[in-house]
Length: 130
Image (tube, rainbow, N blue to C red):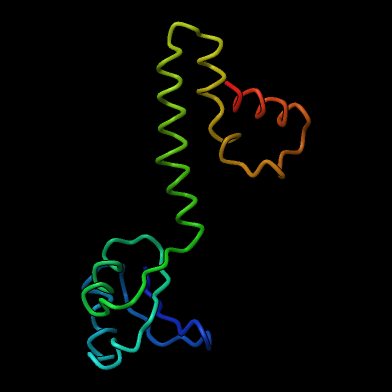
């Protein structure tokens, strides 16, 4: 892995480090210094805990903004899947209904506008109604 720091305004690469750990990204903040860190208003990143901790340590005034892809992915994994599994468990005595819920993961995660077949749209509507 490589950690890449960009200036969001200019889109210039400011720094590249090897790895995804706190130790890997720390040299960037050390090179920037306290004065440079104080000028940082916001940091956009994936949801890597190591990056988050290092940014908060060196730039406590900066807002941390998580990228939309990782927020949606985490939502899909943790929220939608949890509800789906709980509902499947609740329906353990109704095998046909349970099967519908258990097999619906990708249908729930897909953008409804991207459903190609009409039966997928009907299935999604039935699933959400259930």
